[in-house]
Image (cartoon, rainbow, N blue to C red; front, side):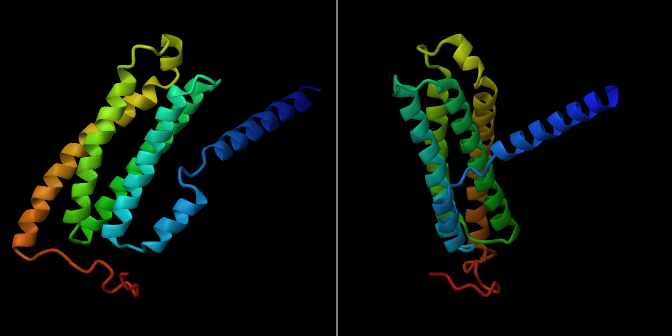
Length: 187
């Protein structure tokens, strides 16, 4: 009898873990995945897409926050902040890849830097919102703080990187054709 109870408990724990793992899905929709895939590895196309997708999550977040009919506002806020964070991390991973390949990303990096400023303002506005009940804010406080810290840190990195890229371009050390050698032609 005791062994059956232990097996049931283990089975329940395993099922719960699997269910939780399934809930953490890709922050990109199928259409967004197709758009990213279509850009191949062209930073001039790919980086602005990640900015667009991250911005869309913050716009959706503002809509959720302003809609009085939303019942699970705290959970949706948490989920959208998490999706924003994961998209922003993916953006930074792509930037790192392009830097490692010595690709010229000055133009898309300027778009990213402009978006950084916008993202900082929107995230700080959410943190400082006076009309949010404390209990509700506690449910997403960690992910919000993490997103703010990530954007703040990355903003500094992006600005330094742009300066480095400008210097590298002066010495003609940047790859102006990122698709070279990949078998993919830029559009």
